[in-house]
Length: 94
Image (cartoon, rainbow, N blue to C red; front, side, top):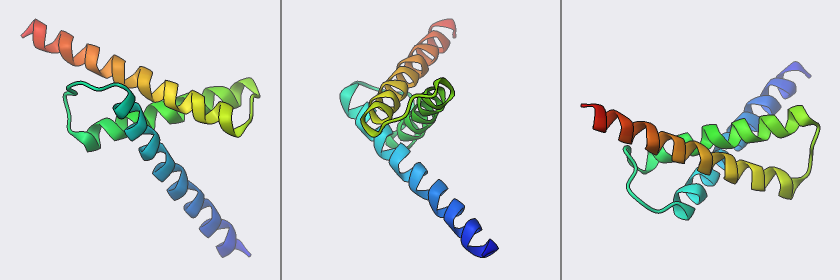
C-alpha cells in the first residue's frame, strides 16, 4: 500500500512537470522573440510560472481544468516577460 502511494505521488510530480514544460513551450510560442537562454531554459522558466499561477489559484480556492490551464499559461508568460526584462536590465548595466 505504501509503495503505491509513493509511486502515485512520483508519477503525479512527473506528469505535472511534463505538463508544465509543455505550458512553458506554449508561452514561448505566444511570446516570440529572443530569450536569454535556449528553449530548455525558457521552458523551465515557463514551468515555474505555471506552477506559481496554479498554486495561486489553489490558494484562492479556485479549481477547474480550463481555468487552471489559462492561469498556468498566463503565469508562464508573465514570468518569461519578467525574465526578459531582468536580463535586459543586466545587459544595460554592464
